Length: 315
Ligand SMILES: Cc1cc2nc3c(=O)[nH]c(=O)nc-3n(C[C@H](O)[C@H](O)[C@H](O)COP(=O)(O)O)c2cc1C
Image (tube, rainbow, N blue to C red):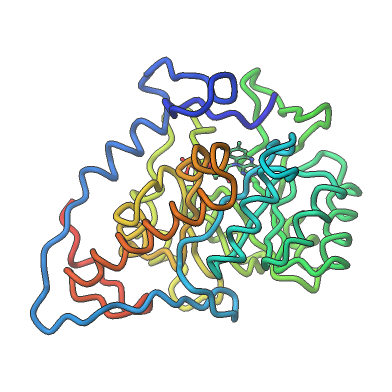
């Protein structure tokens, strides 16, 4: 299988299938849940907000990050792949870049774009492959590495196979071992419960991404629903908490940040501009999202990204 999501995203024909609209599509529930969150106004004494955000010890221009995409390595515009295009956009925006499953040659090209990049490695059944990709990432100066632990089951009820490579379950001991062998911060992507959040933090993860990976989990809850519980459970821990899924505007981003995420990734929200206009399209889209985020922070009296307050939300 590929990483093509099943939500009703109006992307280019052939890349993303149209949804059946079934209730088990977690993307539909996610959208509905995000749209049910409203905000009160706290405009008196409000000042123009600052979006600068420190992620794993480094300052970025905004808490809105790139997604861990993959499989977009066919020739794009200007003789570059879309993977390289959004890395260049990240550099221009001063935001953190992420990539998903890519071979070493594509990863090298992405790193050469010059944006600090997190590499998310698949939970390959062959752990030697995971370790060799961690080592390669270290050698090339990746910002961080991680595993998308939520991509193990396939729709046949067994372990998924991606591009012919079998995936396999990840247990707590595996996580501890991977975290121990690398000098890079290690990120566990695809956490959707307090139980997994605790296991990732106990294993020593530098960060987790609260996510259902654009709806891998049938009937999955929305990341926004479980974020507050996860933040409470990890209070006082060094593990940072990020989130994604369904973030298409700065208003969506605001809600997850107010619910406790330190930073968020825009996923399919950048796909159409990325494929149509390359890096320029992504830069414009994320600049608009940053403006929307700032607008909502201003209206609700949030002066900077360290001051989000869930009490402004009405759910
Ligand atoms: C084309 C495509 C490829 C993806 N590849 C990966 C991947 O290799 N690894 C990964 O962890 N997530 C992957 N994702 C999931 C994203 O990182 C992210 O979790 C998801 O898209 C968020 O949901 P959203 O698209 O609704 O914003 C991919 C998503 C898309 C659309």
